[in-house]
Length: 152
Image 1 (cartoon, rainbow, N blue to C red):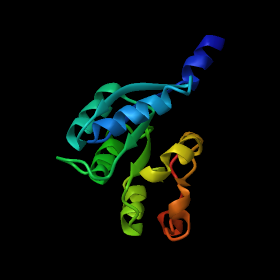
Image 2: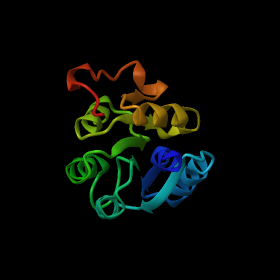
Image 3: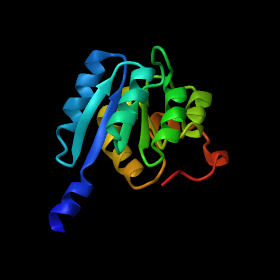
């Protein structure tokens, strides 16, 4: 039973981003956490949906601006396929309407890439606990109050 609990506390992650250097950076960051396991990566939204369905990750780290299928539409599709998966957006896009759309599509968190180094641990933890998360650069002007509760 104890070993089963340890396995259940490990979070499997799918990273979806079209920038190879960013995917490598994210893998490096996540490998520093012994309770995180990178299942795979994808470089576009369609591949991301396919890998999400195939791998069934606990957490999907997702960019907004993806080729073939943008991150918001990918999140909508993934939410239907894997309702329990948590989605954490990591993007350079700080537009309030885009951030709200990301949450409406099923995202639990949104981190600006420029703040990822400092915000990633807190963002992952909040999303894992079923809470919403915004990185500091977004908290002053993005209002999520009309979107309802975060999914748990």
